[in-house]
Structures are given as structure tokens and as C-alpha cells.
Image 1 (cartoon, helix red, strand yellow):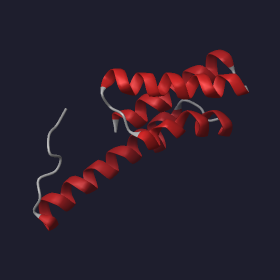
Image 2 (image 1 turned 30 degrees about the vertical axis):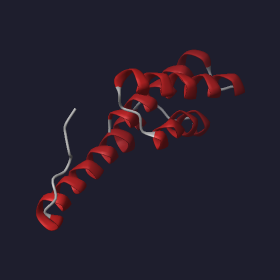
Image 3 (image 1 turned 45 degrees about the vertical axis):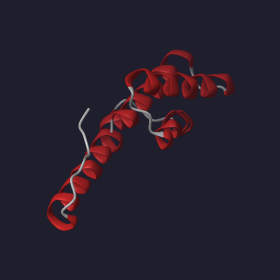
Length: 95
């Protein structure tokens, strides 16, 4: 969840400060991967968030809906599924 929020925020910051150009797209992805590695929240699919946000011209509201709320719903569903249906422990450990 944190990986998606972090990379979306990086994409929005880079787009806001530097605009959308070929080199800023690469910069945003590189900064996103670095931020995920520094926070130990690496999630490879989240690396596409800056590209999506910058190319679609999204605004700051996009960070809340669908990125943060969507990630939270997925985690909530997984938690309920594993606790109620599969009987397995989820997640194996919290941060």
C-alpha cells in the first residue's frame, strides 16, 4: 500500500515542479524506486504510477482516489479473505 502512495506522490511532485517531458518521466520513476527502497516498501507494479499520473495529467486528488483508497480496499479484502475464508494468517508480519 505504501509503495503505491509514495510513487503516486513522487509522480505528482515531479509533474507539478518540472512538467511532463521525456526526461522527467524517467526521473519520476527513478525517484519512485529510490523512495520505495529507502522506505522498504518495494512493490514493482507501483513503479508505473508516476508514468500513469504524469501521462494522464492527473491532479492531487488522484492520490486519494483511486490510489490510496484502492490500495486500502485491496488490503482490507485480503485481510478479511485470509481471516474468514482461508484461515491463513495475513499479513505474515506488519511493518
